[in-house]
Length: 114
Image (tube, rainbow, N blue to C red; front, side, top):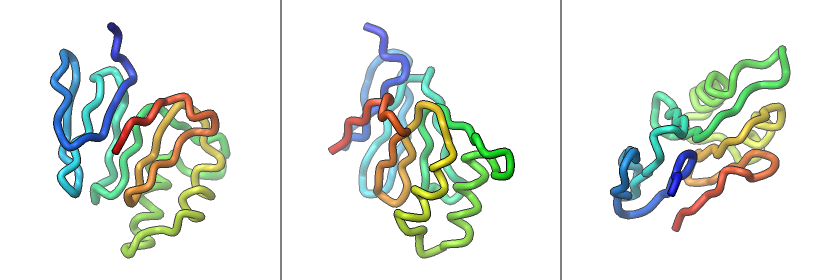
């Protein structure tokens, strides 16, 4: 079975070939196939899984926008701010920020979490 592009957020690590894992807050563990791109913000409050790019030439890359928004809002950005930030992104991605899951426009990267 090919697991490329798959990930899960569970209380235990997925022990399959080519899977990597990292601990998250609250005892959760992110496990993902090594072919899936995973980016984490400097303060560990946001994860971007998959691939996203900016379509507006006047705006920064998704990673730069996330870092800027998190730095401007130490208490945490509002859901509306995050959704506004990602409205000019395209790609196949899942953004996890402040315990909330934001998917790309078509939701093509499946999300399994509990």
